Amino acid sequence: STSHTETFTINIPIFVDAAGNGDYTTIQAAIDNATAGTTIKVWAGTYNEDLEIDKMLTLIGNGTTSSIINGTGTSNTDAVKITADWVNLSGFKIKNSGRNGIFIEDSDHVKISLSSITDSNNVGIYIEDSDYNIVENSTLTNNDDDGIYIFRSDNNSILKNTFSCNCGAS
Image (cartoon, rainbow, N blue to C red; front, top):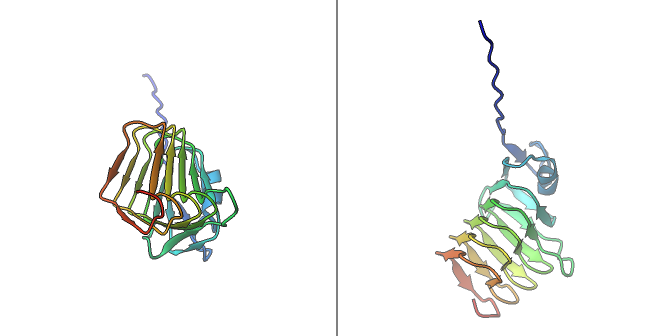
């Protein structure tokens, strides 16, 4: 008789609720404590924080009218900074950035969808040195510069987005 052992890893979603009914009350705490590949579900609420996503994660908000990332507005600080490959972010309103609403830097295969990016001091979504990213079905409004700016990046897809009142060319 022989024995055989197999190990499976199951990533259980992490829940964020500003009201205290989830695993964490801030999105950044959930990011910091998640392992790569985890899904973070963010319930309705306003989250007054800037985020740095530095590992492969999926963040899902409850929609652009209820899951709000209200950046700190700190000068030269992005509301959401992504520095990892294969990040998925959907269902958020992102506003009040001190620099870019979302900054994707040195990251490939990132997907931003079903989100609203507004009131950034610079660009709504800035993509730099990043390839094969997708921005789709999102709204970019009232950003002080471009809605989306792509720099030193290839094969990015910008699909079915709405641009309104961005000061630069979108």
